[in-house]
Length: 123
Image (cartoon, rainbow, N blue to C red; front, side, top):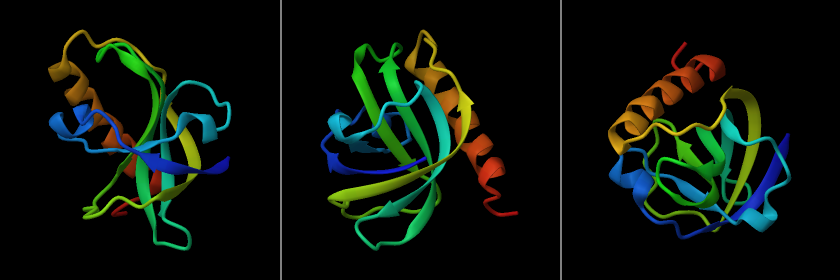
C-alpha cells in the first residue's frame, strides 16, 4: 500500500524517547490495520526515498490520541517536509501497552532493527 499525507506537528514524545518522528495528518491516511510497519518514505513531492518505520493507531503507553508517525532510519531530517509519501512493506507487530516509556523505547529499538532487516538496509 502506498499513500501520501501532510506532515503536522506532533507532541515531541518520540524525540524524547530517541526516535523522532514525522507525524501525518490522520484524515489523509487510508484505513489500515493498527500496528507498526516497515516502510519506505519519500520526503516531499519528488524527494528522496528512505527506509523508515511507521506506527499507526492508538498509543496506549503514552496515553495520547491515535496517530500515524514515521521514524526515518539512518537519516537526519533538518527541516520536516510538508508532505510525505509512505510505501508500506511489512507489518512488524501489533500495538500494545509497554507500561513505561523506558520499555517502549527498548521495543522501538527492536522495531527499527526488524525494519532494517525487512528492508535489507545495510545488507
